[in-house]
Amino acid sequence: MKENTIPPTRNDVADRIAQRALARRGAHYASEVRALLDAALDVMRGCGTASRPRVADIVAAAGLSNEAFYRHFPSKDALVAAIMEDGAERLRGYIAHQMAKEATPEGRVRRWAEGVLSQAMDEEIAATTLAVMWNAGSVGERFTAGPPSAAGPLATLLREPYAELGSADPDLDASLAAHATVGKLADHLWQRVRPTGAEVDHIVRFCLRTGTRPGCDEGAY
Image (cartoon, rainbow, N blue to C red; front, side):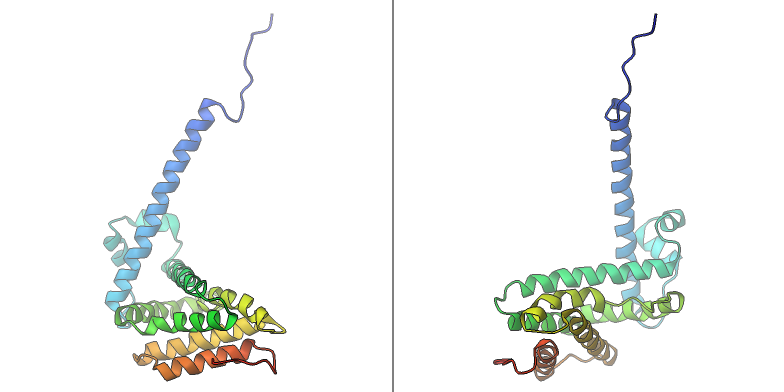
């Protein structure tokens, strides 16, 4: 006589308990990563462009161990690249929010350019951004694609308004405008000067010309 058994299912008690444990571990690891990113940013801000922080400095500031660091990042370069990506996504979210306030593509392009250049307007933000960029310079030596840059993520925001403005190649035009504007931002950060209102207006006009079909009226911009 065969024993009466209930076949196991993927949703049995053991599976649910294991999934809860994994979720808790995932949340714990996410908090470790955030602590490392925030600590590294604080240490970089303090070092400025005078020196690059060590892993030991970052771990101490985060209140974590070397084991925790290397659990998430194979090297300091990987952490710096993650900081660049995190910062680019935060800036992208801020600029997207500002662009959403405008009804016209011209207005959205202006908001985009102003948002990018705003990183050089506030002294603390400018110092932090410069410190991260300086640290990212060494990362490019180990990445075949070059140092990480915010230009790529920011360019995606220009594709839609450029398409509305009649660009024949919105992706390429957005990439060109983003690299030019981020490059100009870098110039201001290194020179430690804020863009003037006239400079911002000039860059806005440049971005509009880049994405506007020849013969289209750029209006008051």
